[in-house]
Structure formats: C-alpha cells, structure tokens
Image (cartoon, rainbow, N blue to C red; front, side):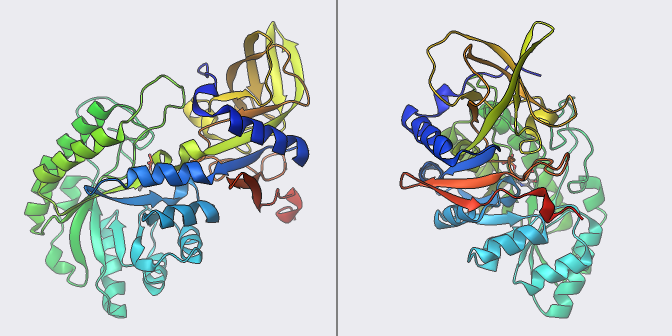
Amino acid sequence: MSNATNLTNIIGPAFVRDIEDHYLKANSEQGYFIYHIEQLRQHLASLQQQDVVKLWFAVKANPLSKVLKTIAEQGFCFDVASQGELEQVLAQGVAPENILNTGPAKSKVQIARFIDRGVNTFVVESINQLAWLNEVAAQKDVVPQVLLRVQLQWPEGDKNPLGGNELTPFGLNVEQWQTIKLSDYQDVNVCGIHIFQWGNMLSNAKMYDLWSQMVEPLVALSKQLNFDLDILDLGGGLGIDYLQTGQAIDWSTAISDLAEIKAKANVKEIWLELGRYAVAQSGYYVAPIVDKKINVDTQQLILSGGINHLLRPAITDQPFPARLLRTSNEDSTSFHVHGPLCTSMDKLGEFKLPNDVNVGDALLFGLCGAYGFTESMPFFLCHEIAAEYIFEDLTFELIREPQAPSWYLR
Ligand SMILES: Cc1ncc(COP(=O)(O)O)c(C=O)c1O
C-alpha cells in the first residue's frame, strides 16, 4: 500500500471547519459522504469554457440525484451503462436524446427498453449488439445513432484498469469489426467510433500520444467499412492525483491537443465521457475513529467505515488523501488506517497524522466524489450503508439517509 499524503493542499480551512462543526452536531458513529456542490458547479463550468469537445458525464462515477442535476445544469450529456443509471438520469429531468448507452453487457431486451425510453445513441461493443440494435430499431421504427467501440492492441506492455494493452470485454478489435458489412445493418446510422482503454492518466503528453496513435487505425477502419466518421468518442481516462504527486492533466492543454486530434481525424465532433475528472475533487468522506492501538511497533487506527464505503484503495493500491478532521498542533507520525471488515484488504492507507489523534476523532478523506459510494462493498459484515450529504449555500443537506442492514437482510 502506497504512503498517502495529506489532504491539506486540496481543501480550504474554512470548509474543514464547516465539516467539523457539522460532524460534531451530527454525532454520527458511521462514515458518510459530502459533496461540495458549488465547487462542483465551478469546476464543470470551467470545463465547458471551450468549443472543441462535447462533454458527457459517465454516471457510474457518481449517480447521486443532486450531483446529476448540477452536471445537467452545466450542459453535460450523460453516459449510462445500465438500466438503473438510465432511470436515475431520466428521473432528474434529463431528455433521452442527451443520453448515450455504453457497456459490454447490453442484452437485446435491454436495448429494446432503452429505445422505449427514448435513447437514440448507442456505443455497440459486439457484433451481436449491432445486430440486436438493428433488429429492434426496425421493429420500433427508429434510426439510432451508433458508435462502434474499438479495442486496439498496443505494442508497449502498459497495463491499466481499463485494459491498456490487455484484452478486455470493452468493444472489439479492428479485425473483428472488419468482418461486418454495414449494408447488413440498414436500420441504424453508424457514424462514429468509441475508444477508451487508459484510465486515470496524469500526463497530457502521454494522453496526447495515445490519442494520436488511435487516429490512423480508426480512420482506416471507417474507410474500410465505408462510413463517414463524424464522431470520435475518446471515453474518459483524465486522471486524478490520488497520491498527491503533483502531476495533473491540464485542461487547456488537453483541449488544444484534442483540437489537433479532431483535425487529424477530420471528424465533426470529439466526445469525452468524463467520470473522475468531473466529480472526484468535489467529494469527501468523513469517518469516525473507533480504536487506536500499537501492533508490532505500528500505530493503527480503526475506523467505523472502510472499504465497505470506499473500495478503491483496496483494488488500486491508491489511498484517498486524508487528514485529521480537527486541528492539532502536535507533531505527526505515521498511522496505518483500517476499516471494520474482517479482511486485511480493508485498509484505507498509511497517513501522517498528529500524535494526539484518538478514539472519538474523525478522519476526513478527499477526492472521494467519484467511484466512492457506489464503488464499495457495503454488504460485507452488515454495517450501515453510508449517508450522503451535499454542501450548498453553507448548509449541509442530507440527501440519502444512512441505511440499516435490515433493509436487505432476510
Ligand atoms: C465507457 C466509459 N466512459 C467513461 C468512463 C469514465 O472514466 P473516467 O472516470 O476515467 O473519466 C468509464 C469508466 O469506467 C467508462 O467505462
């Protein structure tokens, strides 16, 4: 497990004080999430200060109603990967023409349901999906717009959560797509290509290099299949500096790089589906400390919530940055921070924390707005499901109550 650094650089003292006041009043024994809506709004508005890229939000990163509404208000469209995500986005008043459907597990039934709900843009990830969509479109007398999801092989040995050069179920390689004839799929409008194989990138140069390498084979595929490549959807992958290394994607550089890619590929539109780059920095997790001990010369803190609420550190070896919620002038030493589950995987990191940190204090984690609440393992050991608050107009509003395990236990 990597050594995590402190959260101080990415959260202002005033907001920490607000969270501390709220924590003391709420008297919660369980961990909970907070999303800073004004911070989110400002960040999204800054992402929209350009006319190069059409922005979609990958709902899997954070499907909370108020988060989705804030994102919709900033002119984003939505990438949904399941029926649950679709219904949640529609419930926020988003028009179906502003929704696209990605994901390798689209059944024919699911495709028909999406069409019935008015969705008209599909990223197809297999020849079956293309055939099913074509069939359903003919039956329902609609002409969906389709992007073929392509998976390229890379010469280097880089690995990555989205696959990198490893084989994944996301899309198909060029050779497979070359076997189809678009004349067999007359009821859909194939007009673009989707590609996304690299997650959490922190270097503009590396992203540009990868995007550049994609252009030639993708343009060639569109020519071979004889369709106009109007749209190039490059997915997500813009990274968040969880380890506080100082690396970051610079948005204006990314935009000028994408303008070049757009020209090189000669496409009408470039799309991105941002997940973490849109919402990670606006989310926080507060967790009370329930025990402190020294074990084989190691200082250990046990929190009431761990990977049951925040799984990511266990699967990526990247802790979310953290700090002691209250202020302390004591010197800091290293503490190993664990959650309540009966697995050694339930470790949120090693942090430098003031020596007087103790039972009854809470830790505050940052960068938790993406892949937090929904990317967790909430059922193991039957702890509470985390509450979710928003912070707006200097007020905390409880959007989702903490949920006792009795709601799912039978
Ligand atoms: C199809 C698709 N688009 C976009 C994203 C968002 O990725 P990120 O959080 O890296 O921006 C994901 C994440 O898995 C995805 O599967």
